[in-house]
Length: 355
Ligand SMILES: Cc1cc2nc3c(=O)[nH]c(=O)nc-3n(C[C@H](O)[C@H](O)[C@H](O)COP(=O)(O)O)c2cc1C
Image 1 (cartoon, helix red, strand yellow):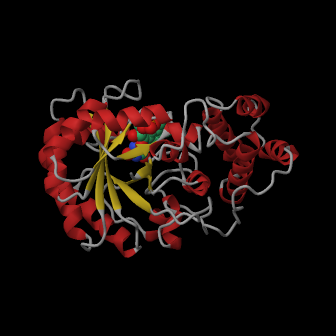
Image 2: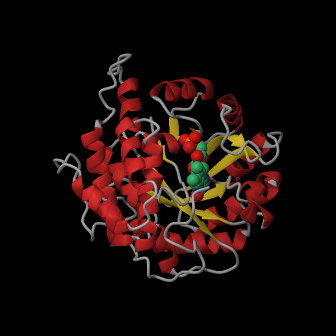
């Protein structure tokens, strides 16, 4: 069973990918989207979003990262995909699900789900532009306002030459509100001949089990659930192997292990993110962790109103010295592009606000 880490713009960047893939259980990551409008982006624009490109397109734990492109112009997307292939990206993923108004107004993201023919042309152009050994995949929602074109879109993507399709089982109109309509993923599987990966509302082991049953998918993609519980992928694998018994979730790390992960994360933030954005990054992750861990709630409350990264640093340093449960990161681990690197063509800051 493949477990993929979801792309999450403004949240799941190289730092969190690094930390989460060290925990284990994740087979592949998809980067945050790189927006393509009408230009061929310079290599540094790609490396800024996907610093893993400098390291064989893998996280320090060795997990491959596929770069995700967002746009609506087949030729321009193809040119940029070709450049990503030159940079040895572990693959190209196409975003057909972004609900952001500014993106949809320009015909990109989920807006494309109203035009299956254009979806087909985009995938075909990208597939033809990169060498055959470079995987091309896509990630779609069920539709824009409703799901009447779900199957048409999936078919268009598959016939365009995508090798894999992730389905986030909601329309753009559903936003991120539960439930996720996993049964519609089964409908997609019935009309395409490529592997389909199920995504949406997998927060617990039991969700993964039910999602796989209902959708019929073996592969799943985890987003907010694994940000809230970094050991979720391991727990799902253990459950699948029959090692998990009700009430005995040994995989859920305790606070010391989580502190070790937070310290690792903070180290990466300190070395790669500009000072004014650092406290926000820590709060953002703790805000997810506190959904599952009471101690994270306390830590969150401690830093909730802080903006000065030096004060946050003092708090993180004051935590008990945690034994290195996970391999420690070094500043050069990723060789991540520094925040001073200027790249107006893609995301404007190192830490855009979460949606
Ligand atoms: C803050 C945030 C940012 C996201 N950014 C992207 C993105 O860049 N590309 C994409 O295809 N999906 C993006 N998504 C959607 C997720 O990849 C995923 O499909 C969605 O969160 C449902 O999965 P989940 O319920 O496991 O979180 C984003 C979601 C969130 C909450």
